[in-house]
Each structure stands twice: as C-alpha cells, then as structure tokens.
Amino acid sequence: MRKFEGTTLLVATHNAGKLSEIEALLKPFGVSVVSAGSLGLPEPAETEDNFIGNARIKAHAAAQAAGLITLADDSGICVDGLGGAPGVYTADWAETPNGRDFEMAMKRTWRELEEVGAPHPRSARFCCTLVMAWPDGHDEVFDGTMPGQVIWPMRGNLGHGYDPIFQPDGFDITFGEMDAGLKNEISHRSDAFRKLVAGCFT
Image (cartoon, rainbow, N blue to C red; front, side, top):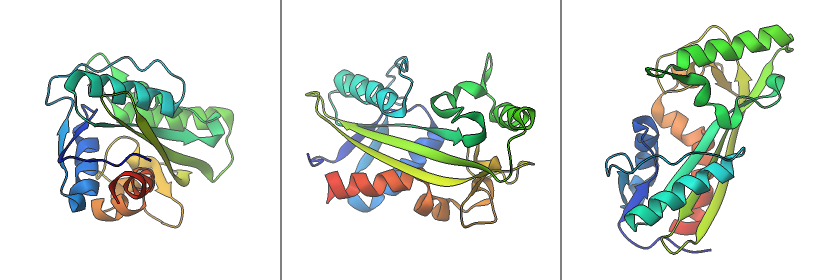
C-alpha cells in the first residue's frame, strides 16, 4: 500500500461540511487540506452507479488537474426499505434549480417508506468510500459504514445532509443532534478514515 508523502492534500469536494470533517480527521497528522472548490476545479460528472466508481472519478480528475495527491469521498445513505436507495443518488434527491434542499430529500425518503409500508425499525446505513489518488494514476480505496435507522420527525440542526433523520445503532439521538466530535468518532466517514490512516499515514 502506498504511503502519503507530503504536506498538502487536495480534497475533491465543493462541500464545506465535508471538507471540515476531513480536515478535523487529518489534523493529528499535520496535513494541510485544500479543496477542489477553493482551487476552482470543476466538478466532474459522476456517471457510475456505485460509491467506489464515483469516488474514483472525482479523485483522479482532481489529481490530474492539480498535480496533487487527492482524496475523494463518495457517500450516501442506503435505506433497506427502499432497496438501498437513495444510495449513490443521496445528493441528487436534494437537487433543486436553486441548490440542494435536504429537507425536501428527507421528506421524500420518509414518504416513500410510508408508501411501501416498510416495517419498523426502518434500518439504514450511511456508507462512505474514500479514494486517494496520485497524479501518476495510482489509487488506494477504503470503505466505511455506520448502521442505524431512519426516524421521523426530523430531529436536530447539527451536521448536514440527512443527519436529522438518521439514528445510529446504539444511540437514542440522531446525527443531527450529535456533537460533531462524537459524530466524527463513530461515523461512516471515520470508519473509512481509520482504514485510510492505517494504510497511508502510519
């Protein structure tokens, strides 16, 4: 497995929430983080139907464009009662002509669960695939998950995305009610990050 060597890591995201999570997770390693958005890099089309494929597209596009080692993540919520949807289309469910509306996406998720009469608890999991790509085309891949259930009504205004309707296993609060420090310890992204750190940073 190839090790990260350098001081600056490019993160292939235009999402400020995601960038701050990744920045916090990498802080102990003295790595400075810069986003694709801040460099003005375009967002490539995510044309794959799986997390690893889309993460690879983003990581390699940014690594080639900037000549920097790049980390990309593709993540989403997979709801068992909806056959794993929205999955890779998690952000797409929030798209509107005026930007992303995750409250709309959460309402759609619950409405569709009601329509199919999904049994309770309505199990789901957040999934994260991290791809670290080098400008020479090499990459390393790490997967993480956080099992839990979808609840209603929405609770909490912390976090981002679908956090207010996701209650992780072993907790009676949602990600939307959870302190960022605790969430960063248990989340799907931190699960993938532990594997990334073990593989590329230690």
